[in-house]
Image (cartoon, rainbow, N blue to C red; front, side, top):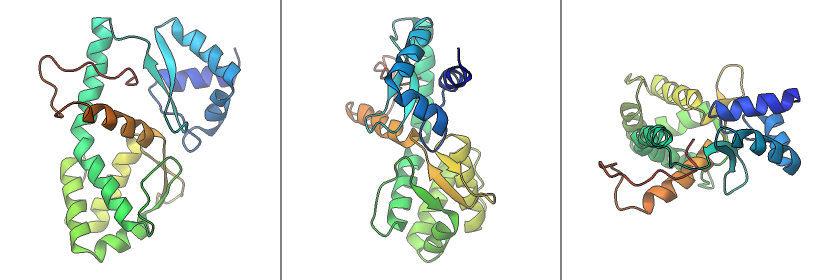
Length: 210
């Protein structure tokens, strides 16, 4: 097996979302249909497969089926974890879109400048309040009264969870990853049900979940 093959498989099994921003070489490797077929053949041995986001900007690993109770339990746990962060993630999307001059939504490759965000937030009391709400809802995020500290803490949290990639040495500039694409698809799945809660007889998590 080639080193690129092995590295790509490791990324997938490690639950990474592979895109041009996060793992460019692995992304280009998977864009080749032959390479993708070979990776799928390997993952099939452990009942997994390569998934691709609808916008074709990201690849990820998913179970071929959730019939096995252990797989279903693991997928449900990850689904529940995503639901925990759902509200602040949606608020963050709203915040960034309000800052963008053209009100463009976040997508893989979107450039996000900490200084531009900070400037806009400090000039708007409503945006400052929204940032405070986001910081309070995210786990392990600073709730400092200082806007700069709160913003940096949120950006760090999003980077650590794979939604953003720091492209500046000082951590002041970021690129959005295709994990946002996957989130949008998960939102579509959620909206097919009436609520967000997972009752005892919770709906089966969509196959795209790791």
